[in-house]
Image (cartoon, rainbow, N blue to C red):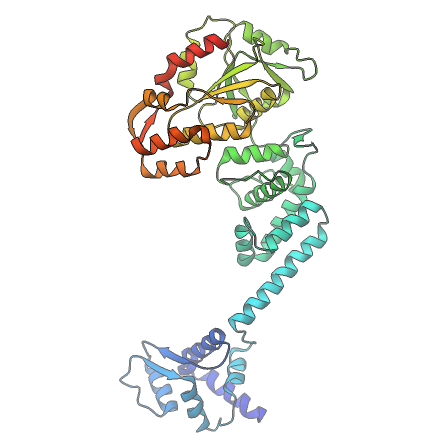
Length: 445
């Protein structure tokens, strides 16, 4: 074909605005079909399009608001002009000014470019965990959606963020098994890695990427671990602490009495904690204090502690005891904070038995399940029978959305209560069980 004729055709159609939308439709068809064909439908025709297209196709479009032009008809019409013999696909390529890729070709190119993107990072970071995480993302496995979405949005920006996360993985605090040797505050750690103390704030995309990476790594070390809800701040706090990173060690606290910090080897109570027990002090122990103590024990040496969810119940129970030498009682103040979990880690490793009582609602049952799952050898459910539920039952009707949470309840010990709750649709509260809880504490104190 005469190259001059092709170039003349390109210049002609580029200079005629009446062909612009039609050629755009032809290009879209080619990309979708993978070949030149189909039809192009144009709506809301302009006067210029009516005149230009009608004249070219040899039809009267002056009264048409829309037209449908098959590609083959356009090719026939072009064959009757001075551009006869011009290949329409070549014309479209030159008209657009760049190679036109079909959707299949675009996807193939995208996948090749994405693979190269991650392979470069894999080569740069030989650390085992870094490589496994990157390969996990490249394979588009569970938990990769957010990162791959960020790649599509801006691969250059993602690369900077992933480099920060990978550098963080390499610099995680040293651990002894599954326990950190030292703890670093997250802002200080972030600053040491990136120069920005807020680089890994969990409300940022980069912070979420770090959480995703740490969740993946922990699952490699513990097959039973799952990051259930990456929007749950306490669950994230617990994950970070596993790697020696602490978000807030002052406002994160657990309320307790009758428990003392002790030396790990001798079990000798630390003086300040011992004095607090002797004076009947109730302590809001911040995470900072929990982390500074290697071990905890019940002050009365009975080997048993009691845990309640509700602060009002906790306080009411304590009013029934002398002002000094209070029983070993812990209040989680609702959902378990990291301070409570790390206290229990250090307490229950000493073969202590913990009795846990919470509210009878879907959230309360799931909390009980979580505690038993975390400490299966040490935690005992405390007044969680059907009879207890009936006694604690209130007039609060549980909504369908709340009852649906019971689908996540798998603990066999709570099955009977779960079934009854689904039937009655009523919540029950600890306040109605205070007398029973009190009797047990008196026996075990």
